[in-house]
Amino acid sequence: MLDIKIELTKNRKAKPDMKNNPPEFGTCTTDHMFEMDYDPEHGWHDARIVPYGPFMVEPITMSFHYAQEIFEGMKAFMGPDGNPLMFRPDMNAKRFQRSAKRVCIPTIPVEDYLQAVETFVKVEKEWIPTEPATSLYIRPVAFATQASVGVETATEYKFFIVACPVKNYHTEFSSDDSCWVETKYSRASEGGTGGDKCGCNYANTLLPQEEAVARGYDEIVFADANEHKYIGEISASNIMFVIDGVVVTPELDGTILPGITRDSLLTLCREWGIPCEERKITVDELKETLQNGKCTEAMSTGTAVVIEPIGSFGFEDVGRLIVGDGNVGPISRKLYEGLLAIQRNELEGPEGWLVEIK
Ligand SMILES: Cc1ncc(COP(=O)(O)O)c(C=O)c1O
Image (cartoon, rainbow, N blue to C red; front, side):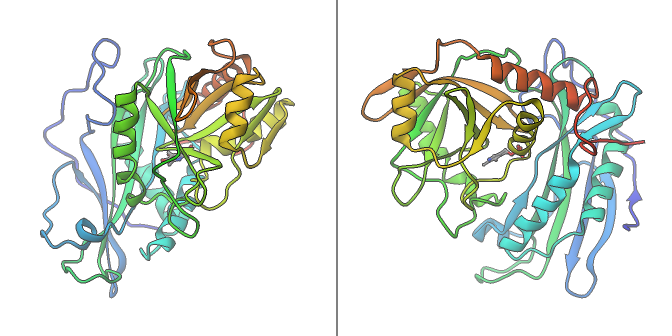
């Protein structure tokens, strides 16, 4: 159990107008942040919630040089009783532990992570927007703070949590989004960090993303690094297809982030009798099933995007292929509406998914 000291700000910021002028995703922070430090003598210590502000760190701070950093992405919603709701926060806590182990950051006990997030959300409760398609996006991060340019495991770290009121990336549930199938660059390789939420996984997606945008696509889906043959995931979300009426998503092979949205949607499919499969999907299968009309729906899934239908895919050899009839399909819509309703406690979901913060 953490002993969290709370120092409230004397300069509260004005809250954004989420209805008429919502800030760009992730640019508007709340009044406070959670912080806790690690050193070998004290372990994780000095848990505190303080006014939001910059950190003083040295230019030789190790994480700047060697990317020893991990993070999570979670959301809080305002519940009907005026208490914040969080969706499966234990899954984020456990994934944070796995990510920490992969890059040698000292782990934070699941109970401490949850206590930190929940205490912070309680302090920032007034920042949880209530307009449709809005939430408080929560970003826990751990990074090496030790000052040294030596390449080695750091001995000192900081864990912090900040939050931003956000409007969903896409408020219209439409099939406008297009996705380039990337077979030149790769995101993650076998034995690498692709299955963990490490900052180093994201920098290398930026150039391929820019190139895809220049070609006229919104997103990219990466193929495997060995053969560029199997579909993997999008830069910051998982991918699902409906092929022959079955929801199909790439199996977790260590190179794909085990998305909590992905897991939740697969669970809902099983509960609701929608056939689903986790298996390998080749780039050729995707191309062929788009051409013969068997792939009728495709969606990007993640905490930030929720579910974003994909209307077309671009391939190096055949160019752009439309998904189904070009409209949002019934399975994507059912999953989207169901997930949103569960997250807002308007529909009962599986036991333990929703945590009310009192
Ligand atoms: C690379 C990557 N894959 C998948 C996801 C989706 O994961 P989740 O549903 O847990 O948000 C994310 C975003 O969080 C991500 O960054």
